[in-house]
Image (cartoon, rainbow, N blue to C red):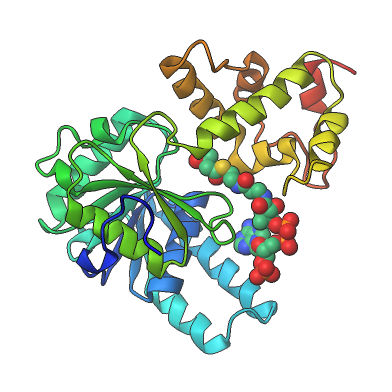
Length: 301
Ligand code: 3HC
């Protein structure tokens, strides 16, 4: 069934090659998903060879895991490995039909990335962004063809989360939007059409939810108690674990964007800011214990 207000995916352009800007965790997960479900070549780019190699290595390691768990046949794995490549230059996108960016959450950086991509791609290439909360209309504003820009907002872990928010920016045309829905369908995601408003739909809810729990912890609730209490409500993941999955820096960035847009409704947690400043990527250590630096920042219970 077609989502409310969505165009017919059959009106979209064919996608025979995908470019991914960024080779970080989100970008690498996207490369794997696109190659696996669309079965087309996917090229990852980043600032230097080391980052590119790391992204491609992540994809290959995930493929190995799927084969080891008998979730993928060795033949499909070999084909997939051949489909995913890396490059340090965006010229590799010259014949791409869709380029998605998943770089650092900074509007100026994303605008620069889109300008560089537009300089090398064909006129018909759709440009997508996986931004969590930034304005896609602003991101497209200085391009020659802002009508080709659309939001494709995925959720972590990309392979497991069914939801895809498809964002229509002010100038997005019907064909680009239809292409986005066709891609969502081919990726076997549940696509929903959302407006280009700060943090779209789901991150507004999640930021409020996680913000309140972090607030309770800042006010003295024990870390484990806060996690367990919500776990017992039947949530799929404990909230502090979820902050680690999303990444504290991303969670903070979304909260800041929402605070700017709706200051009376969204607070920015100072302690979360300290956690990010200290370079922590999770509340927990690799073995699942609370990271002692978290207690230093939040104070003892
Ligand atoms: N990569 C690939 N697949 C994964 C995975 C990963 N990292 N983690 C789990 N999976 C798959 C498993 O392989 C399994 O697949 P199967 O059914 O085919 O065997 C399936 O997901 C379920 O996994 P498990 O049974 O091992 O574990 P759970 O039942 O605990 O589910 C979870 C794991 C799906 C991650 C679940 O805990 C969950 O839904 N957590 C909430 C995640 C969430 O809210 N994400 C949104 C974050 S917000 C965001 O990303 C937006 C950004 O803009 C900030």
